[in-house]
Image (cartoon, rainbow, N blue to C red; front, top):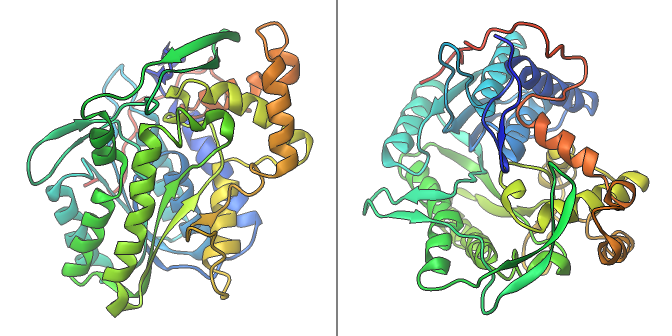
Length: 396
């Protein structure tokens, strides 16, 4: 079939398998171009099919020759219907990992569930014995608690008052004012239940209990802080409360791994175009201005550049980890440079529908968004027929 992008708001309802594979190949090539990393050799990535999770799996495999198990929740293809981008990404990753002689298996299911945790532990025992790195990179709007059956839904709201600021519709380029009502009732608790650290801790506890964590194992979860421009709706909003919980959980996990000499870290990454960030009002406008500034300064990074740098310059240097005052790893250091933030703040004040294409990088934002789904990828012929029926070689 000929596959075209069909969008609804910040979601793309279709994905292009050839474009997704090319994205994966480009990331593999980047990691290989940077040389070997003396990193973990047996890696579990929870949330492995897109964004930072996919970049982590690629960096582990092609940077450190690691065996990887990926966990994700994605829609397979059906005749006449495309699979999700994450499904095609995983199929492409496994294909190229196997061609390179690397172990790669994947489990498609609800990572919050006890059943998927049990399936992963069984697979580790059968194939790898123990693992020495666990990446936790889940981005889900809902979570069903595996023990109580309670279903929690996260919300994106400020805390304490209405938030009003500019945003942009990245499809049309229209800059407008938006107001978001504050959290009420159980909004904060529900968002923490979905996006906080409870499930990360449950994963590590389950892995440790079954003796599948190696001595000295590391685990890393991903977070974001961002600038003052976005803090009312992000870092000081409901999502920020969840990120605070996630970051606090790192310390309790490290305590629980003391007997294994294990460590848990939260890595604060830069703002990037992801399916999750596209849904957050204000963020697309901020990112389009940020990209313009960082590209002009030669500082721009995508997911794969961020994670390759995290591994090679933070996690696996052979030296003590560089941490901030709150014990976090920072690879948002280039985004948060004073000169970068000062320029973005200045541009923000003047941004309008009429001038955004000049002062910002809305085209770069839009291209990155469509790239997530395998569209607008250079060298792909989108007028050509493509087989939508792609299988993940190892899928469990």
